[in-house]
Length: 358
Image (tube, rainbow, N blue to C red; front, top):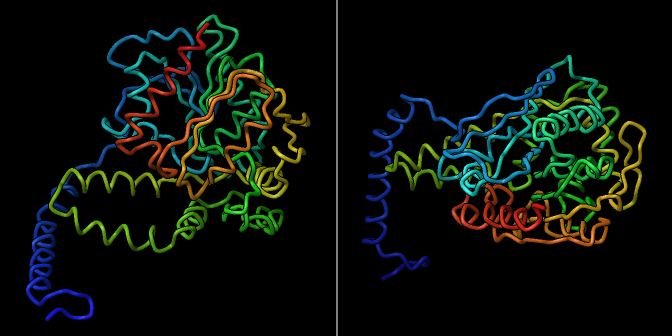
C-alpha cells in the first residue's frame, strides 16, 4: 500500500539506488573536473584601448564583420562581463559575431583602494566616453551602436542623454529604469539605507557583501536548491563544468568604488531619478527626453533583479519616436546563457540594428 506520499517501498528503493549511482559517478567526475581549469570566455579578443584598469576589447570572430557600425557592450559594475561570452554554446558575443556584428566590450577591471573616489562621472564621461571616442575615431564614424546591460544599461541611458550625437542606436537589456516598482525587492532594501554611513565606514563596497545581498533575494533557490540539483548531474562531466563555470562567475565579483556606489544608490535606487528627475553626472542633469536615437529595450519576464515593469517604464521617458521592446521568457541570467536566449536574442539585436544601419 502506498504511504501518505503515494510512494511504494519499491519506488523508494529504486530512488535510493539511483541516488547511490549518482554519488558513485560523482566520485569519478569531480576529480576529473578538478584536475583541469574550467575556462570561461569562448571568443578571442584584443585590447584596443585602456584607461587605467578599464580596458576596451575587440572580439575576433571566425570571419570579418560585415556591420559597418561598431557595437559597444557596457556591462554592470557588480559582476564580471564575461557572462556575455561564458562558453562557446552560451555566448551572446559569439552569436553576434556570427551575424556580422563588430563587437567591443568595456572591462571595468577590479577596483581597489586607489579607486575609492571614482564617481559616476568617471565611469560615464571618462571611461564610456573615452571608449566611444576611440571607436568613433577608428571607424571614421560620428556615432556608434551601444548595448547596455543591467546597470550598464542605466549608464548607457545616462551617456545617451548627455552625448546623443555619439550614439547611433541604443539597445538596453534587463535595464532598471523605474526603481520604485512594487515588486523590486532590492530597491525596497536600499531605500532606507544610510548610504553615507555605509560608504564612509567601508570605503569601497566589498564584493562578498554584494553577493550575499543578491543571494538573499532568493535564499532557498540560490543557497540550497541549486546545490541539491547538482546531484542530478554528477554523472555528466560537461554539465558539472557548466555548473562550476557559472559558480565561478557568480563569486568572481569586483569590489565597488565607494563614491560611485553612494551616488548610484542615492540618485537611482532612493531618488528614482530616471522617473522623478534629479540624476546629475558631473553637474549636468540627465533627461531621458534627450535620448532621441532608436531604442530597443529587451527585458526578461521572470527577472527577480529587474522586474519587467521596472524596465518597461523606459517607453514613456525616452524622446525617440523609434522605440521597440522585446520580452524574453526567462530570468535575469537566462537571457544570456539559456538555449532559448541563444536562439532569440542575438538575432533580434542584429536584425534590429541592421534595419537602422544607414
